[in-house]
Every structure is written in structure tokens, then in C-alpha cells.
Image 1 (tube, rainbow, N blue to C red):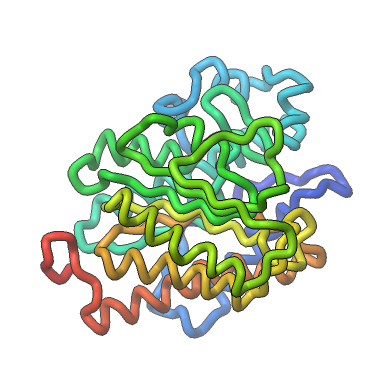
Image 2 (image 1 turned 90 degrees about the horizontal axis):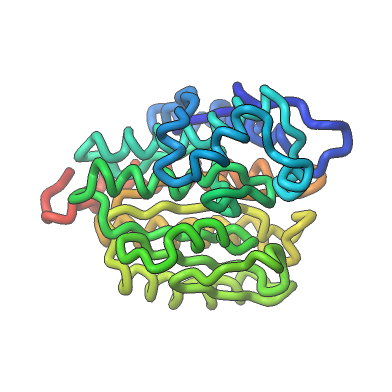
Length: 320
């Protein structure tokens, strides 16, 4: 697991984004004795401009790096521009790309993750909704370019409470990448929503059982439609009932059940899995931190058990 909290900047007092969650998630996982020997925590590198430009317009990347975004563009993103913010944006995308490379370079690897990223609202030439560079898209395009046989087709499973509009837009009409999003029907984004290959809208106040009832058949449909070799899981936890922006009513246990559904499909079908974090905005922050940590904790424990029990099989049918 890669982490990028080393690159985080200080936001203005009262800012709605809980920057400290990244550090708190890492610390919770480091302190968890059940994960010893099952998870390694690595420092995320800074992504290079050329690595971003496989997805993003060169002009946009240059203006982000050089502080050339307009006031309107920065308002849409939701962060003030500073040199430190550029470092964070680069680490956020760099950690996901590093996890992708670690996953694809090891034939026997099953899962890799980044405890940040999931910035699914970023378009090719614009950012919004706390998202500047689309790390999901960068990882998918890089996988296609350098690991085509091992990675394609790619399934993006986006379970953040907000629709993955940037990712859907970038891969519209792209037969190599199937975009699947389950999100609040009445939630952000409103004016910039796009159409994924499979979108599932759920109403305000949706509970654990209602959410899982909607997720189970649609997740199976996404896997059946795509038959992926690589799954990228945007594991936002802003569907929690405590979340400031979520408008749904899921519990921590409900999200664990959600995570397990994704992991079980990947293990059963022999897909490689790349996990990134996504949104979470509860106040106080503890509920968000616990739910984010659960994403990585459950993956580490489940995949370790799968290896021990011999349940993981590569697509060719050989134990990896």
C-alpha cells in the first residue's frame, strides 16, 4: 500500500476538506496488529508531467504546475493554489500509478492500493470537486500502454457516493475500459454529470440492505459485461450516514459488506485489483477514518486468506 500524506499541505481554517484523514488512516493501519506481515506501507512518489499527459491536456497540466489556473477554475476544484498543493496533486496521482506498476510488474500479485487518490471528478482539461488529476484514468491508460495483455479489459468500480463523471467522460466510447458507478441520485455532480457504461442511482436515505440489494446484481452485470483482467476500485466511504456530503444512510458494517462484494468477485474471477481511496467527510472525522481503514484492512486480510487457502487462481488456471 502506498501513502502520500507526506505531501499534504495546510488548508485555510474552516475548509471543508478533511486533509488529516490520510495521515490518520495510515496511522490506524500501522497500529493494527492483525495486519503485521500482511500489508507493507510505502511512500508515494511524485508523478511526472509526461505521465499525467497520457490523459490530461498538456496546457492544463502546465497551468496547474505553474499556478496558471483562473480563479474560477480553482473555485471549481475547491482548493487554493500553492506550490505545496501541486506537490500533493502529484503525490496523489503518483501513489496510484506506483501501485498500478507494482501490481502489474509482479505476475503473482493480486492486489495493490493507494491510501489516497480516487480523484474521479477530474476531466482531461479541467478539475472539480476536490479533484485535479484523474489518477484512475492515468492508471488505466498506463496499464493499457505497458501491460496490455495482462490488464485488458479494465473495469472501474466506482462506489463513491458521487458519480465518477470525469472518469466516465475520459473513457466514453472506449471499449477497453468499462466504467461502473453507484452513487446518490440527487447528489453532486449536477451540471457536469456524465454517462458511465453502467450507472446505478440510489435515493437519499438508502440503508445498508437497500444499497447492497442495488449493488449485487449491478456489480455482477458489470463483471459479466466487461470480463476484466484488471479492476480499479474507487472505494469512497462518503455513503456513511455520518457523512457531511453523502445523503445516504450506510453504516460502517454496510460498507465492509460492500467492500467484500468487490473483493469476492475479483478473487473468484482471478482479476488483479487496484484500490484507491475516494471521498469521506464525516464530522467528527473518526467515522470516515475507520471506514477508509476498513477498505485496506479487509483487503489485506481477505487476500492473505485467499492465498493461504489456495483460492486465488490466475486466469490461466495456475496458482500464483
